[in-house]
Length: 116
Length: 114
Image 1 (spheres, rainbow over the protein chains, first blue to last red):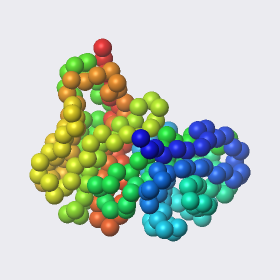
Image 2: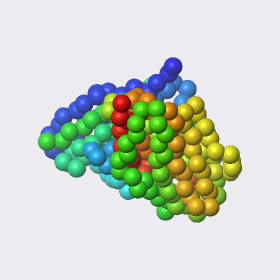
Image 3: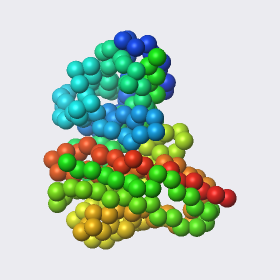
Image 4: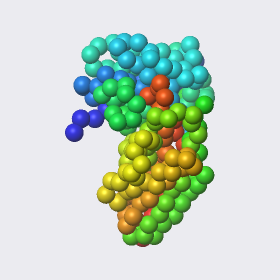
């Protein structure tokens, strides 16, 4: 069964450093998402991406964040200058279309980002 | 703005028994979808069940079923014949209107006692 993969599984970085989290969505999916989950809290939407453009972003997704689909398979989330509060689990998801509901968003296993 | 509320931070059930997890939501949209996601200790998010708001019939998936009360904006998950593998965090989620983003509740941690 196709699945979303994410690398690395755990990333430790120092405050102020740039990090890139990588995701490989399911191959025929067209919509891609990043969510984050601070430890012990709920999962929060960051951004959705379609046709090489951001289709929606949350207030969390400020200028420190960017997303890119550099080739036909990878989807990346970059944090330019990490802060302590960026420590969280970051989930990538993909869906076949952007139509609400019936097309499931498939989640990757997550990348745990620890900022020290 | 749409919100999702899960008022039970933790629940416990005996193996083979039935448990119901509660979820309420708020929206002004008429067309939307509701979901229950399971997050085991591995932290992978797994879709358990989904409900389309325009369908009156409650969704079922094997041992999992929902009680969808649209007027009350309530969407509870019932797990029958609970198994040890059901132990996980369960998140209720909403998607609707012009957006396809998922809005999650705060989760309910379910423990299954042998």
